[in-house]
Structure formats: structure tokens, C-alpha cells
Image (tube, rainbow, N blue to C red; front, top):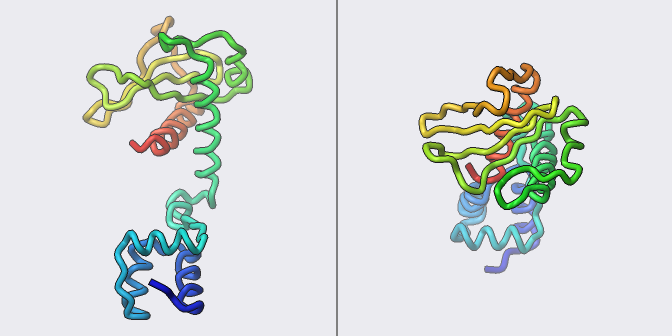
Length: 174
């Protein structure tokens, strides 16, 4: 369906204000009496080259957009970790300690999930200690003891682990 230039401008305005595809579909119906399928509206928005600004998510997190930066950083860290792992899932010594030396907490998700878990993986804390983690079907998050069963990460490391885990799981679609 061909839209007039003013109608296209309206669609671009709605999208830039953060309207979803479904909301744009409803606005087209209400404002211009144009009935389009969801997919047609999606193609229209894509053809117009509209870039979405997810204001709702930024407001919920109260961080003004740093969530996207955290997700991108997590993805970059995860790519580094995956490239430094051997086939057994053990960490290879290819200079992968740079994240531990910089004081960062690093989270990875296992390709093969531990039995009894919805999702599992490993975490490397700022002091360089790596532990396994798992999320059960009841929503319990647990750390799996490593070489030192008495090891306890710092509170700041735990908070960083939880926020990075949330970002990585969101990125992977959990």
C-alpha cells in the first residue's frame, strides 16, 4: 500500500516516539483509516528506515541507556571467553586472565546445560576465581563450589555477577 508523504512522516514520528509496530498499526487505523497487517506495518517501518529508541526499557532501568552498553560489553566479553575455551569447556590459557586482572566479573552461559537446570554456566570473579552457576526451574540461582569450597565472592562481585547474568540471559533470549 502506498502512503502519502505526510502519512509516512506520521509513521516515522510515532516510531521515533517509541511506538511499537502494533501501536503504529492501530494509529494507522485510527488516524488514517488504513487497515494493514502487522507484517505489512513491519515492512513499512523497515522501508522507511526507522530506528527505534526503546524509551520504556531505559525508564524501567533508570539508567538512560547504559543497559544497551552493558549488553554489548557482555557480548564482547562472552565472545572473548568462547574463543579462549577448549572443547571440554575448560578455560584455555591464551591470555584470558586479562578480564580477571582488570577487576571485572565475567559471565558465560554453557552450550550444554547441566542436568536439573534451566540454564547454567561459569563466572569469573574480579579476584580471578572461577565458579559454576546454575538457574533451576524453580528460579533458584546457585553457585557451584570450585577448588576451594570455602570461597565466598565479595558483595560487589555478586552484584556485578547478577546484573551481568541478567544482561547475558536477556541477550540470549531467556
